[in-house]
Length: 438
Ligand code: 5AD
Ligand code: SF4
View 1 (tube, rainbow, N blue to C red):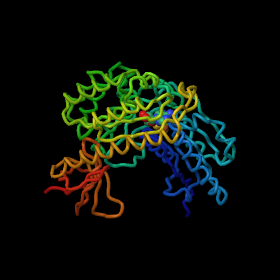
View 2: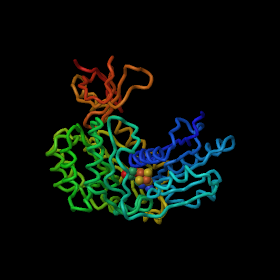
View 3: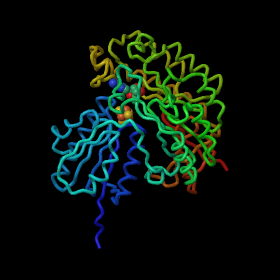
View 4: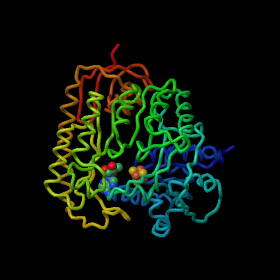
């Protein structure tokens, strides 16, 4: 008998939170009797999970929708746009693009299963906020990795940085109960997961809605779960990164010695206009406190170049901070105005070519820093969590060390899901390579 079950394909844009949401959506659809397809051409429903954080993220979505419009000409397929652009553009997505059938905001994806099951040809939009956390049973989630599991602990943002759309797409901060978080972490540990990544747009402002316990308690209770190897968390805001969090981190061995701490700009004047709530000196103070507590701590960051009014001198200060801190990795972006944000009312004063020049300059600098720092690791043996296999060479494996650096190594035996000691023998700007010892 032919398999009559509906088939769905999910394409995810954006951050880890979106990847995690897609894993949850896949679980809900599975529970409703639908099965995952590997290619959009094989699906009855295509779900596009979207990101609105920069103009470019939205452009990528529209070009993808263009491709889906072509596909829709040749076969009957329903298209759902979910996530941040769905929340932001809502009805506009239906009006502008005949391609789209369903639009669901980040708080509305639980409505997908009934839409996928139904035969309605009607269009549907749902972008209402929910004040309560919607729980998904941990066993349902269809995770992409069998080694490292995402666990969302909070969602949304109350900070309203001048450039940022997140408070408008994900809403205000909402915290998940510690009890449910621990249940999910225990479920992961029971299934052999060696790493958890605690997710939230502002993860260190976490507060348990039931007991009032804060982020340091969350870290220590998660660390007490048997079987877990490493704990990571992101994203942290420097404004809320008090000494108690640094000390909690330093006091728990299972918490990886890596922190993603977005700086955004090295100029205090620009930071003020960005409404970040800290100065360059305060940021550097946090870094030196962290490093005195945890020597060898790896730090990564986000930088926006060309924020309205950013002068050459402001930019040079960013360059100086990057040279001083020597981040292990850098995510850098050209500023783009986003709807509703405070900065969108300012003149986007730095020309695109100048933004590009500044972007290239810091990327060049960062590449040099990474090459130098990777070079110092040659001959050393480092602990790596093996996450997957190389695409072309079957005996080549890939993983990350505590500092979140990518490490490729060879082995004749399957190493996925194991901690492996690797002796570093080579490097490039973005990864290390080596051999498994013993
Ligand atoms: N323009 C450019 N980059 C942005 N980011 C957020 N909003 C914007 C914007 N309007 C960057 C920040 C943030 C990262 C996720 O995206 O650096 O930390
Ligand atoms: Fe993009 Fe932010 Fe939404 Fe994540 S939360 S998908 S980064 S806009």
